[in-house]
Every structure is written in C-alpha cells, then in structure tokens.
Length: 153
Ligand SMILES: [Zn+2]
Image (cartoon, rainbow, N blue to C red; front, side, top):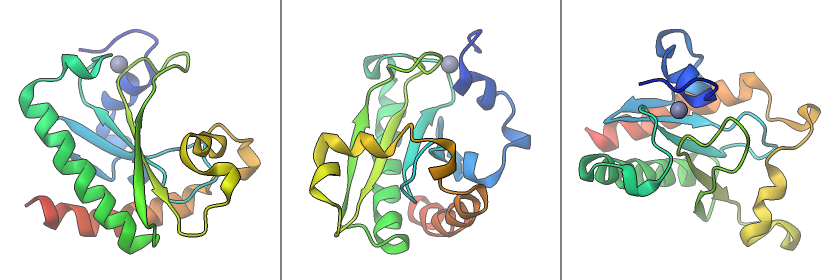
C-alpha cells in the first residue's frame, strides 16, 4: 500500500531504480538506506516496505526482522566507519516522513560533546553543501551490504 504524499512510500514503490545508497539491504519487510541530508558518513535509516506510522503497527515478524537488521547494521558500521556503537532513534516528525523509520546512527569515538546523545540530530537536516556526497554514500552502501547480507543469511 502506498500513501499519497509519503516520500518513503514513493521510494519503496521504485525499488528497482533506486541507487545503492537507497537500498543497502532490502529484505524481510525492510529497506536499509543511508540518510541523504546528514553530514555524518554511515548515518543509516531502516524503513519498512509498507506504510505504518507507529512501531506498534509492526507485525511480530517485522519487529524481529528489525532487531536483526539493526544489529547487523551496527556490527557493519563498527567495521566500516569505526564507530564505538550506534544510537537508535524513531522520531518521524518531518513533513512527508510520518512513515515509520528508525535512525541507526554511528557514534564515533571522537564525537564532540556538542553532538553527543540527543544532540546528534544536529548532524541531520544540515545544508546540502554539507551532505555526505552521493558517491561516498554509494561506496559505503556497497561496503555495508557486503557485511550485512552474509550476517543475515
Ligand atoms: Zn509511507
């Protein structure tokens, strides 16, 4: 089901033409993507393939798949970008993004105090000139997929 005006639904409906950064892994009801408007390499987002707006609307199978994907994504990020751990957040307050999505954010070892904890959101929604370039997001997507797919097999 696609909901009018919902950006994630629009992209979910075009899986076959999405670039690597928008489909790092697609399986078990979820799509793992690299956030587009962040300055932090490796800021990932888990998006369900169907339109739900609350975590409570997930089926048990989708919730289990979410946990497995979040764990595998965290392990891959620790290897690929060298983060110490990840932050996991579900917010969904931006217009056009009520579609459930969970941020999987690499917490780098050298993260400055002014972006620690909830202040990490300062690295999202930054000016376009500061976005991680598309080519770098695609390269990260390939490296992460190579680790996540085998971990879930
Ligand atoms: Zn949607």
